[in-house]
Image: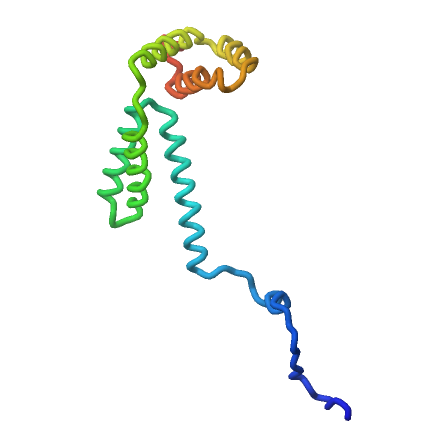
Length: 159
């Protein structure tokens, strides 16, 4: 008995799943893509909110949270509704973060005044070079104050 010459429908009794997947496209479904983009967007929003709140003191995240929430509520029918979630996150973050004790506030304001005395770019570079000699745990607060003074326009450089 021989095989028929035009036999195209051979039956394979032991097929592996990998062979079938090789010919199938691996594109995720629309729902999977939407879920993935939503998760990535939420993660980026959380990171952005934390980065935004790190720039200011306690009152700035509160003001930013109030303004973003108000804009999100006012523009809730359009694309501006995207602002609602970061605004609410800033409000919750501000409410849940512990306030600085009065002693820490006075110490920090003294540090800010002392660091504002380094007003020229050369003095700031020298100070940053001194910070580089120590670990980030020791100099993190000083570097944060220097960065906030840099973003606020370096009050020591006025007039």
